[in-house]
Image 1 (cartoon, helix red, strand yellow):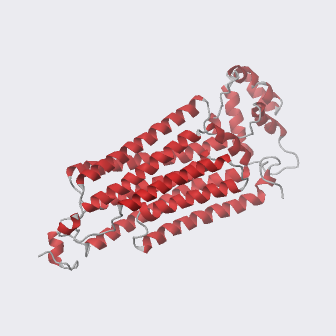
Image 2 (tube, one colour):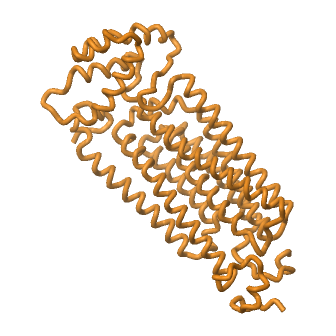
Image 3 (cartoon, chains in turn purple, blue):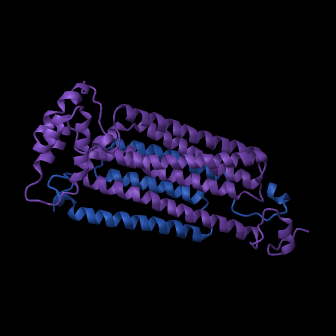
Length: 293
Length: 115
């Protein structure tokens, strides 16, 4: 008695998955997908701001990106790319299983996807921890630990550089108890510098203050810019991975309960779309951050 | 097939497993290529190559993993529009910064060639 005509009311009354305000399952499915694609468009715009910041910084300071990218491990980046691509594959496979009503396949695929997501976060943890230990952090927290005992230099050696600068800064530094004040002053000035209007003679005091960082071999100025961009972009992506994992976990629980089948798989499909978008962003982040030439 | 026994209409397109597997293998191969390409010094072309490969990979994911080939075209229109707006944003910002950033503070952006 199940009519082939999708518009018929008798058919919709017997279908528990069709909401009453939709004419047919196809209309309901397309509406859900349309909403998801609209959301994905806003996600692209969200990341677009960061990609814009990346482009502007890299165009202005290519030397920073070439210098700083050597601190990122190509191996970990490539491994994470492979892990995420595989998880996308299992997710797409899972959607197929749901559409065909293969209960076991769906659960296995979702579990594999979830596992890959956790592996990705694990690798990210290893990478972040390494950066943290070497002081390769964002903004004013950037204080790289160099291997030839710079720790003593940081405690006492940073002193001379500011004294070449503005007398007020030098006296402020001299009065300070701890060397960390030097770092904060330094970083604060670096942030301020971009606001300085063009002048016939540059603010020599401030310029020579930040030049104190140039003592470490061939390190360019303002390397912290790269790490700010790096942590913001991978961090926001990481947040999306965590949200994706929560959604996949929810879908997996429902799949185990047997909620999905050929007649109803929209949640699996939409979570899949979200997970693929996370993969999509990483496809661009990997070459932009790890493979700078 | 399972959907023959169900009384409900089949919605959405079911991707064949072979296509999914082929797309995944292509993605892994392209990842290898993009990593291998960094060992060659191609100058400006390195970035263009990396971005080209990334765009190819993203297209594969969009078209097949995300079913965009078989979807309603309007979904693709939405997505491509968002990409266009991001590109507009980035391009205008780049044009802007290229015009004055290196003249703002002498020596601030040494990587940018002075006009």
